[in-house]
Amino acid sequence: KFYNRFILKKTKKKVMILKHRDVINMSLEFIEVNLGSELNCRVIASHSGYSEYHFSRLFKSQMGMSVMEYVKKRKLIK
Image (cartoon, rainbow, N blue to C red; front, side, top):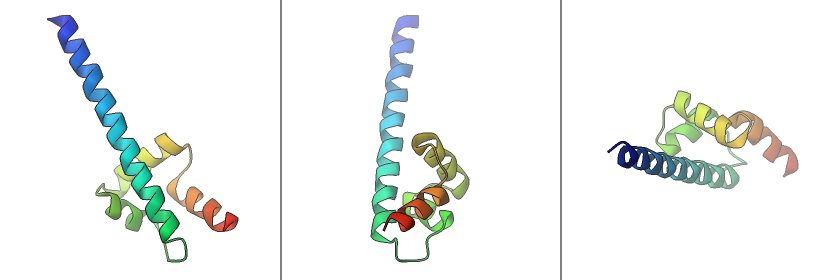
């Protein structure tokens, strides 16, 4: 029983990680398409379907920098 619960928890965690990556990838595409527009964390988060708080935490954990740091770097490169 314990082993089955452990596997189930591991599987759910992997699914959540994949889902988070998908959300980040969609957001990165959204940022790229809208770099010329006025972007802020609230706009990007609303596009992802997450609250601004949760999205900013997720983005930073996946990308290693804040949303606005990423946007500024992309604008500088472009």
